[in-house]
Image (cartoon, rainbow, N blue to C red):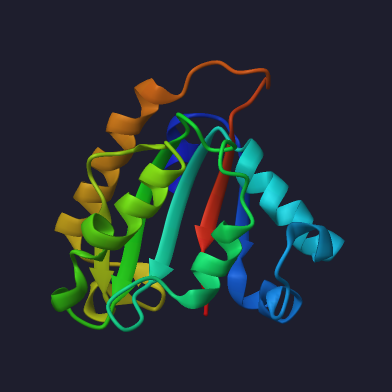
Length: 166
């Protein structure tokens, strides 16, 4: 998210699903969601670009991640550029971006960026990315995303990051 904000002045917004979990649990329709969750859904739907990240759990995105996106209107993300990212305990789950995330966001008719970013625990030190090759991949993914940011009805592009903390 910082790479995009460094390249294009934008308003950043982070959605942390771990904090929303108690408010999402047991809700089966969007009309039953509390205002705090509705506000986060609206931020995702109205963003000009999304950085969608999830931890890998049992070979896929978390149930909380999917539950949140079940409330997104199916037409709200059409043609929206999305950078896909995931973290996992080992490289064995690196294809989660291609086999789980990309199909989910294809349903929404998003413009998923061709480069995804997958990281493992060893790529981080003190919650900061320290692997140079991975940092370069993230920078390249963002560089390729910038031409997709078209002027919209907003003076400044809005960026929503989905940080699935489950």
